[in-house]
Image 1 (cartoon, one colour):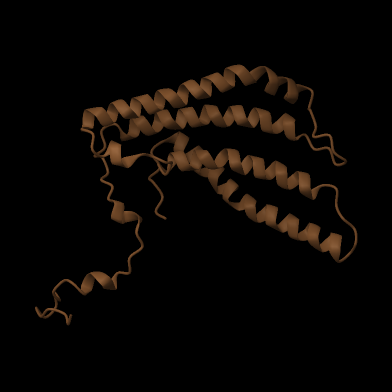
Image 2 (cartoon, rainbow, N blue to C red):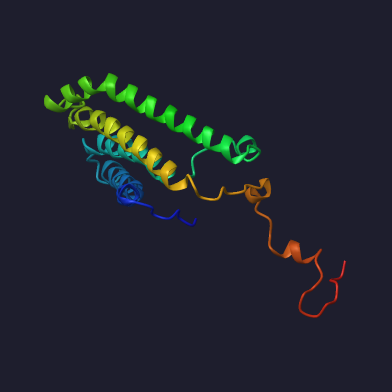
Length: 195
């Protein structure tokens, strides 16, 4: 995959977060392998691996959307978007930005009190290991949504005057390269290929 260009300070922050998040699944796999080994080979299960994998997995899940948005790889309905003239595409982009910002504002507005309370009392998970998952994940949800809204604004600003990309349904097909040479004349010697 070719990454989208970095267009500002917010993209740099998103890229740094995504680089950390890209290595976290390997960490989760490693601690689960450790748990399997100590549980079934040594007969000494841990108290912390299950909760740690939930904690880290929640962080990965939250931050992955930032990277997808920065890369412009989120789901779009190109069949409608590509048929629209440039001015209507900009209207669609503004509507999308409005929806993202309204959603982010509503969740932050409605969840700020609860997230603040969980963080200030350092609410824990309630298990034997008892990590502070609610105290950290609830504020992370709000922080991620603020960054998501800011990333949407940044994308709109940087893409506003950019030439629109054309999307062809054939782009999604994985055709072998040699199939194209069977129907086109050879450019090297002017002869047509055998059919």
